[in-house]
Amino acid sequence: MLARVANNLYWMGRYIERSEHVARYLNVNYFSSLDAPNELSQSRQFVLRSMLFMVDKPEKDEKKILNEEEVLYQIGLDPSSPFSILNNVKIARENANSARDLISQELYEAINKFYHYTINYDADEFKKNGLDDFTSNVTEMTGVIRGKMRGTLLHDSVYAIIMMGINIERATQIIRIINSKCQDALSAQGSYQHKFSKSFEWTTLLKCLESYDMMRRIYKKTPTSISTLEFLILNPNCPRSIMNCLNQICNNVKVIDDQKEKKPDSTAFLVGKIRSEFRFKRIEEIDENIYVFIKKILEDLSSISIKMEEEFFNY
Image (cartoon, rainbow, N blue to C red; front, side):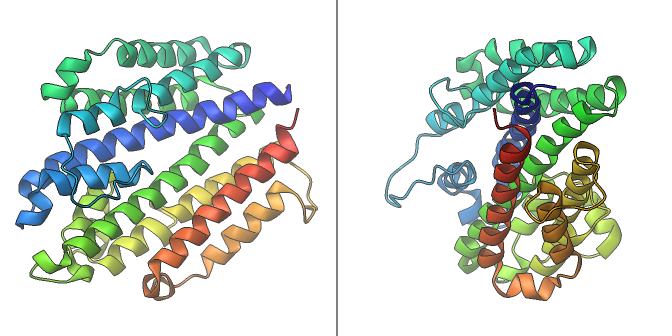
């Protein structure tokens, strides 16, 4: 396989996963505010600022009144916005086009359908009352695409490279969402009956990552900062936990690099090292300074991606 084509497969997986997480964050954050237990988290300004913070475009002017339609359009369907769902889907499809010979017809058709749905969605309809319809369909279509990957591709190096991209992006988006909701919980703690550890934002965070029901099944209590972070970061059985993503990355990199003796400068060695650190983490260590941890894991994920590009995609 050409390094250039492998790179296209990797980024195809990343942009598809990114589209899903941004869409789900928009949907859950917007509509959960209707049931929020206090005035601040019901505020549209609070919700819109949270959305911009999540896509790494925070509004620093606290006095500025954000326009709801403009913010939603910017994140959803704005072709000039580099972080919009529309552009994520366009780039994913471009990468799929470049690797057309290595993916199945069924997978390509699903990606193509996803692209045409997004590019042809009426922007005015989206801004007025199409948020739920658009974001729900985006999350469903990305689920279908992942199903086509699992069910129609050979589980060889092509599949492994795509899944590497998906899991690195998933871990990155999970951390970004955790960071955003931690910020929200910190900002809103003066408005809640309980402080940071029992904020309503932990429930919203779990729903953003489709993990609320399973978390309640394990802990059988209202989410707190400790239980939520433990579930989403350290639980290896949660499909959207950081630990699970690292396990999947480790398994996939073994398919690409099957050498038993891992060189210290290899991607496999770096992934194994970061994964081993996580296996012996305690949630109390993370909770003591969550922002230091967030910065560290984002740096680790970035270093894995850079190392992969150097080792496998350098052309």
